[in-house]
Image (cartoon, rainbow, N blue to C red; front, side, top):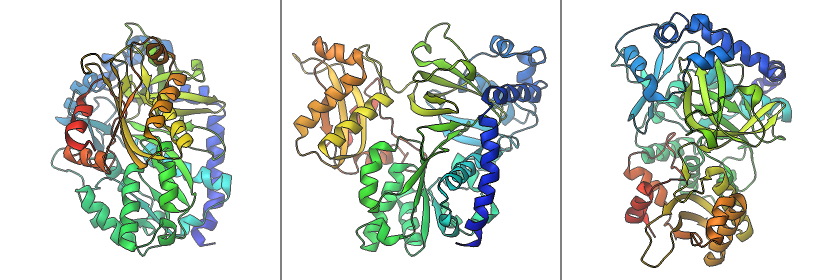
Length: 500
């Protein structure tokens, strides 16, 4: 055992005890966060516009701070960009995190000196929880790689601007710098395919023990390593590789292909980072879900997902959430986001402590026929079907077909790229439809009532989704393909561009 791994164990014990303390008193922890947030922003333009001086309780806060999104805060963010201070949070942000928007184009999410530690400490805490629970720390002595966006920042404006992973790269603790890869030069390569090739070449002879990134892009890295090395499996290239850290997408559809590529099972830690704040992290290998990050400058609110588009939806704090209900996640942060709809839906799997899973996106669903199928249901259905047929999926996209050929019933169209195809695709198709019916009663009623025909699978060629993402300039980094849509904007491009 090396010096770093030796020291990491008592350090992990100290920090995990702190986590246990605040997670054991969650309501009080969140009440304290709300009080600190309101106090910190009461003299800002937003605080004055919304009467923060008179907010004493959560009920006051709800009355005076509306639910909003980026468009609703854009006038304040534009004021910050023009040079004003004390707008959404005291002072000015130390960064703008640049991220893709839908209606707004590019979004500029503020990161303040108070909020930056949230992004750093939560990832660290996830690793420390793993060390404390498992006793495994040897990986700390070896090389680690974080597949991420370029750390180069745009400094042409008043506030440095970059992608979240690139900003965070500037704040990696010193004790990890010597272990960390890739090199700064390679990390700055913008073209993702060129970057992955360079990372693979740079790391091929290193002793990698920890690998982190969004699963589809890590898969691309593994495949390139195997191709370059002539080895059959990643474990033959990196014998010390023992821990995979991921976030951004559900890992379950990738598990079988990762096990095949790696050649063994490795432990994994799930994170829930976002430009708006680090929301949750996996604190246990034994329990389901991720611990909600309650003590890190974020006050959480929740709206039941099935009420979200109502005129007056329910709006609750942590105290009133229930296990098993899909909630739209609302953030209030010390970066200056207020009543902010992040766009994700979450589901609580535990309230002692408060652990969540990410169940989808509030706008990523399929409900062209009133069925409201969500990501959690389709991912669970395809995982179950893949296990039955002993096959593996690289990626997929689901969209409604509302205008089929004359005489045909409408249907759900699944675009699936297989890593390992099922022996009987027709049977796989039928079983997938049955699995989805089990998970969504509205969909089952539509099938059984002959309103819809059973789903149709379009088998995609290898790397079809990578090719599609490349064609729209979103290959790699933190970019993710939506797995569900309520329209055919992506589906029609897949047909024209990538269909096998």
